[in-house]
Image (cartoon, rainbow, N blue to C red; front, top):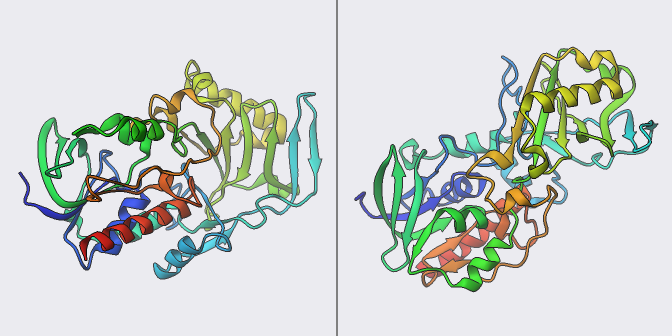
Length: 361
């Protein structure tokens, strides 16, 4: 068994990394992450050789005027933000197969994006942690609520951990699906977990990369709303560097509707829709990135795969602690005011750290 830790954090997404970053100077902390990478639902591949030319396949927007925690964190970490491009007309594709063009104000005129993609937050937080404290490819299987012993699997081998305190920064449905507790969690609590949708779990994003922003040249913002699909919403997703340009789209089909469709079929349908919306210039595609979050095991539970893709409403958590407050829940699904946003991930972590401090003094 590994030696006993002060705090073990399960989940190295934004909530987990932020918790470790906040605790790093006071506690011996390790993070256990089932994926081979850190970041959780934040995924921002680079699309060029220039630094910060990243696109966001997970969350993309922030609103500094409405999200004080995220705004303060980006400033503290010296991470810059830039305005979502919204200059130009918006296209609407209706059931009557008509494409209508409007010059009204975009609903994203007050939206911002993070330079280098949201992964900049993840990388900057991780850079200030001891690299040996982050254990990826480590799938937590069980937790003993009495001894605070953790059994995890890495390289097909069971590994034991022990802690004074545990912070679980996972979506509640994933927590319920993946981790077994001894003794078992009360049914009324697990039922609430099952009723709490996982943010991003039903979404599928597709991003088309271009050498030029042809839509801007036509006086268009790149913003599209469609009743026909398969893409229901499209936005200008170009990185701040503008080394390349991008159109980012949400697929309007839910996870069950997408399941029988191959990626090749989906891409062909999306390209046909782009051609109808923007013309031949839209077919000069440099690269395509697609992420169906419903297919990622540690994002979408079986329940999530059967529900529609929209921004969920989160119920109030019955309890944010287990095992006499020695196990504390975090993650955006447990936030009180900003569930399902990056701000919610930070909010929930601050609540968790407040509980931890109160129970260790």
